[in-house]
Image 1 (spheres, rainbow, N blue to C red):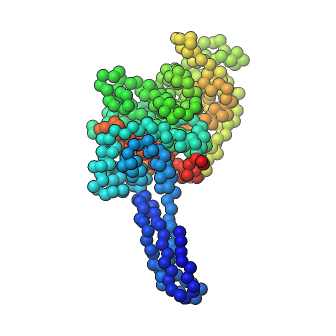
Image 2 (tube, rainbow, N blue to C red):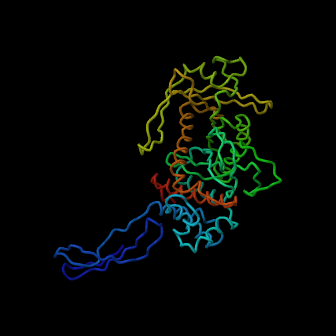
Image 3 (cartoon, rainbow, N blue to C red):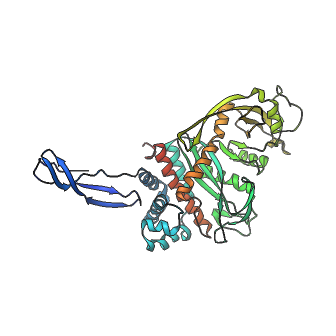
Length: 430
């Protein structure tokens, strides 16, 4: 910003400024603002210096887009992607195609934007990989979290919408079911990968294949994470997920075969074998997870962590009791019988454990293991609040590739907000 020095009483000075419209995320250009200002010689009328307003979320989105959209071959595609992210951030309420286009180019841009999302051929996987790489270079990854996302939808105009049972909510609903893979670190919680559950089978690259075998719900949940991690190029990091209703043994085996460590919330009735000869139940055959934990709750130790809380920006300090027991999950194949840890948590030692987890991270103490499970609580909080702000559930269309492109760009918008909130909006240091 520049200004011209003026001797007191000699006249007005021309002052120009570059402004950024924070409401729409578009640049207003250069303007001159006239007002009244007081100088050493008195009051004169002339251009007044008004501080430029900066939108840190918009700036973070620009930084992200310059990296994440680089894989798009054409300049017009990169600009459309940048406009779409701006529209998601600027538009309040439901993110419709018409509303997004109106934020960046008016009604005439709607058809062009619709083609860019639903009718184009650009690949979303490189964008997701670039997003993961940008985030990990900014703040080291702690864990991947698999988070189911139920998307209520009426009618039959949206891809994958149907009447179905949601295992995680334990009820029937009409709509879509998707799985997000979330990047979590000490500073960030944001989604980077997606997969929609399609009982009619999802073929390669997100295209419906009527001849493919139907994908099981548990397979879709595991594949969502495994594919995201594989495309990201990151080294093995723990995966946190809830498998109480979707097959504990088969899901654990899938991650073991993929070479990914996992800590999974399991059903309290999960049958396990105690392998520590110093503990009750050793040699007694299969026992339920809750029964095993109840027999050793006297060994539980205090564990503390910070929980997300809307009323406390820095989170709320929490503490519970936890214990870890060496176990084995039965399997018909001897090669798959691996040593695991069973982790139990109590909010009240007079009652049964409130949460039960199994993990192949057998060398970690119980404190770090339990704190690792709390990444899931951070994701639930972020999905409920930040997910609505960027329209993760708002795509309306029959094209599955269109849904993938929408949630990918919505993830970029979510990351821009998360980076800004964490104070790392400018990304990695060169």
